[in-house]
Image 1 (spheres, rainbow, N blue to C red):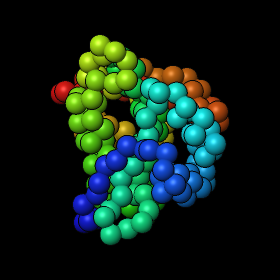
Image 2 (image 1 turned 45 degrees about the vertical axis):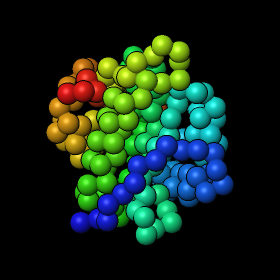
Image 3 (image 1 turned 135 degrees about the horizontal axis):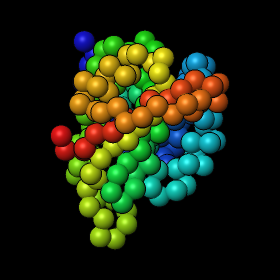
Image 4 (image 1 turned 120 degrees about the vertical axis):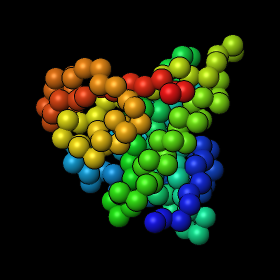
Length: 164
């Protein structure tokens, strides 16, 4: 079992920028790749885009990163990444649980906005571990987006009410 993790929202501090730079160098080598560090920083210029990360108190590195676009009523999970050596240890599950908690307790940046009602996401059809995790959270399959990813792979859309 992995040491308990903290779940924090990204702030543009030197330590957080260094953590994002380090973990983004890892995910660039994943199948299908992901955005560059600069693209993530660009997305974070929009107030609705939030980056969360998990870390263990005894380590000086991020274990996982979660990028979400938080709208007035719902949120889109843009990406969740867990370091390869920490997969299947509960880090991803912990990050998802914390994301649901954050969404249900934080109204957002827009005046008069309320806690989010649902979370939506797309996942590669080949990513069986992620699909199993999302289904274990009670997420429902909505549709398949044909050739959604740049390499032509289909994407499976899931959604779930934030407060299940």
